[in-house]
Image 1: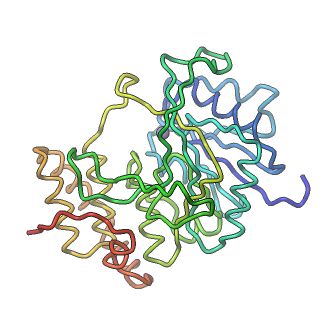
Image 2: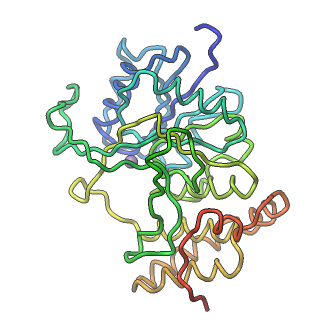
Length: 329
Ligand SMILES: [Mn+2]
């Protein structure tokens, strides 16, 4: 094992099917960091075959934690960790591939070089893979299509066009060094374990899409913890399409934005967030999302956070030049 500090790779899994196995195999084959384990946090999963976890290649390195309930992406990731279990956490979507064997060493080096940050996002290169991967078969490289598009980070955009376009990519291609950005996009996030627990982990009420990562980063920025994008580390991420049944759940999406706004933003922006969502003819979804927000503990979170924060949302929106529609109320 050596003296290297332990890294835990957490894969939340709800019906990922063969992609979960391919992600695990890719990590086991292409990671030269000596001290790591993979934890699968299965939740509400009725379709994935987990039998590969028992095979010799996974023994001692890969473990499975199962919940019959659907926990949401943040809840499932939180369920895979506990204080003191590792030095670093690597949260990957369960449809990712890694290629460069030094990827985890680089992630650890970046976290060690910047101990005061909330998280690092690597360069995420999107790919498509027509059809479904064959059971128990390796990936077929001839079917894998890399898109030119890479994700580095996101910031809010309030909003452009479609109601699900609540963010836009933040890209700085020319930078070889890690650079500050507003938030991770959710597919691959690297953190110091101690920081992750200190900042309060992912918000379990925020259900998926990418909002759990945005919520974590906004909270962290206001508490004085920067988010970094490191383009020298690369992770490949499968772009899901409507064709593989990835429905847009507007209530979850709207709720994620509104809950974060209610916890951390000024009353003006709490209103603006709602006004922007209501312009898309989805009043009933907005109403349901607001009802969910009201049933939650946002007010307690808001007052606890307000006491501890170093910056307000005007500072954050100005720092990242967030676009806001010039009307409210
Ligand atoms: Mn994904």
